[in-house]
Image (cartoon, rainbow, N blue to C red; front, side):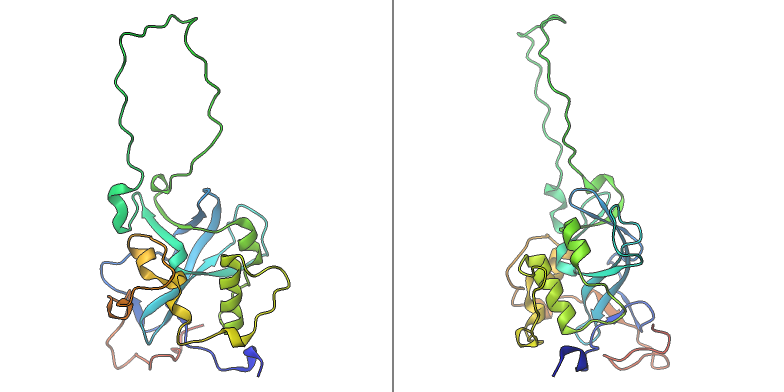
Length: 241
């Protein structure tokens, strides 16, 4: 059976659902998105999450403001574990070691130069992007080529799309690569480090698999307890697009 023929709607957008970000966690919708070189990729349009596990799986990135040429009105999905958050400092738990100010070298008063003797140095040409100077920003480990090659998101995701995203970020999905549903196992797909919420909300350390106690960790999305408006997990509300 073709992938597109299968019923696959377990991921929904946060906007318009009966769920919200839990207290104490940042709502990053609307934040600008940049890559590690400081190039503007776009803005966070929404979050795609699993209502049963109450875990965010993807950031939905609107590329309208990208600093390079991309398909008009294109949106892409980026796994949550590939992003880092900043709001003037790094939000992850490694704040205390991120971008520390180097110590100032003491002046050596035994060495005195005249103006003519001052050593000349070439002006610095390398620019190192420091997201901590950029206010509220999501930083992605992503290249321009990956942005262009990622499949466009059209308010629905299926196994073929998710597998394509994984292969592109891992560098195993060359142009013309054929995705097979035999490679998709829904019971283990999200144990990949691409979906580690700890990378997004905590230390930012990349792991091959998620910690064994991941299922017990605090969820980043919570359901509103309102019998009048709530809907069953996995279904869409009337005002969802």
